[in-house]
Length: 326
Length: 295
Image (cartoon, rainbow over all chains, first blue to last red; front, side):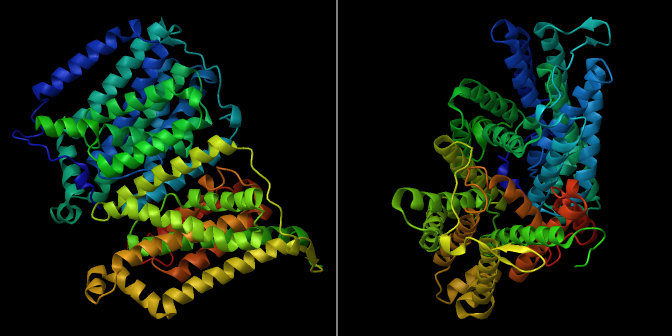
C-alpha cells in the first residue's frame, strides 16, 4: 500500500538526515517563543488543550504521513493512556511526570498488542482492523471497574512535579505541558529525519522494493506503530493531568476521526501541518461548542472538501508555494 | 424439554433468534460493503449513516405522508440508493485514480454530515416506528415464542441476500459486474458502460443499507446514532469474512450474529466484544479472512 500521493514532493537538495534545516529551526523557535508568552494572551487550559492535540496529531502523522499506515483507532492509545495516567495520579498517588510516563508506557503496550495484529493486513483493511480494535477497547473502558464507566475518572489531583514543584495552578502546569508536548514533537521530528525514518519512507513508497533490499518491513511497520501509539499516549496522559479527567470521549471512535481530520487539514506528511490542523480544529470546537451537532456537520464538510479539493492540507499547499518541505 | 448446560431452552432459543436477527443486519450490511468494494475498491464508511437514513426515511414517509411500512420497503431503498448515486457522481468518482484510503476518508466525512444533520433536527432520543399490523403478534412454537416481525426480518434478509448472490453469480448482468471487478478497462473495451455500472453498483450497495434500515426501524428505535456503532461491528465482520466473496459475506454475517447471540447466553459480559475477539483470532490464523483472497 502506498500513500505516496499524500506527500507533496519535497524539493530536497540535502540529505534528510543532515540535521534540521534553518527554516524549520526558525519556525520551531518562533513557535516556542509564542507558546512561552501564550498564557498571558489566552486561557491557559485552552492553550494546553491545543498543545496536547497538536502532539496527538503529530504522533498520528508519524504513522500516516511517514509510515503510510492509516489507523482509524488512535483514540484507544490517546484515551487509554489518559485513563491509566488518571488512575496512577488518583489511586496510586504518583507524581504527574510518573503518571504521564506510566500512561505512555501503557499506550505503547496497547499499540504493540494491536499493531502486531493489524500489520497483518494492508490498506483499508488495516484501517478497519485498527478501528475495530479501538472499539473493542472502548467497550472495555465502558465496562472495566477502574475506568468508572460513564463517569470516567474525575477530579484527578495534579500533585507536584517530582514531588517538589506544585503544578496545581494552570500557569505552573502550562510550562510542564509545554515542555512535554514541545519535547514530544521535536522527538517525533528527530524520528522522521533519522535513518529509521528514511527506511519508513522507502517502505511507504515501494514496499516490495524495500523487502528486496533486505529490510524486515513488518518490524519497521510495527515499530512505527508502537512509537505513534506511545506519543499519542503521551498526549492523552498529559491531557488527563490538564483536565483532571479521563472519560469515554477520549476513547470513542469520533476522537479517532478527529485526529485524522486535524492531520488531513494541516497537511499529511508535513512537519507543521498537524500542529496547525490541531489548533484550527480545537479552536473551532471551542468557539462553536454552543452549536451542538453542527460542529460534527462542519467537521464532515471539511473532510469532504479536504479530500476532494485540498489533499495536501494547508501546510502542504504553503510548502508547495515555497518549494520547501515544511 | 431438554436443558443444555443448565440453560433453559427458552433463553437459549430466544438469544439464538436475537443473534439471527443481528446476523441478518450484519449480513445485509456486509453484503452491501462487499458489493461496493468489489467494483469501487473503496470501503463505504457512510454505510452505517445510510442505514440510519433508511430508517429515518421510512419514519418520515409514515409520519409526514402516511405511507405505510410495505411501501416504505420499496420506496426507501430507491430514495437512499438515489442519494448514493448522487454521491458517487459528485464526489467518489473523482477519487478513483487516488489511493483507496481517500474514499474511506470522504465517506467518513459524509457519515459525519448525515449523522450531524439528523442529530440537529431529531435529537438523539429515538423515534418510535410501529410494527405493521400484519406482522404484529407471534407464533408459539412450543419451545419458544416467535414474534412474527422478527421472523419476517430473518426471512426478508435471507431473500435479499440470496437474490443479490443470484444476480451477481448467475446472471449475465452479474457476469459483466464480475468481469468489471477483474478488469474494468477490458470490459469497457467490449462496449459496456463501466462508469455507469460503477455508479449503479454504488447506488445498489447503498440501497441495501437503506433496506436494512427499514427492516430495523420497528425493532430498534429510529435514532441518528443507530448506524454509527453498528458499522464498526460490520467492519469487523467484513475483516473476518474477507470481501472477496458474496456468499462469504452472507455466511459470515449470519454466523457471527448467531455466535454473538450464544455468547449472550453463556458469557454475557463478552457479547459486546466477541466479534472483535474472533477478528483477532482470524488475523492470527488466516489474515486474509475466512473467504478472502489475498488483500
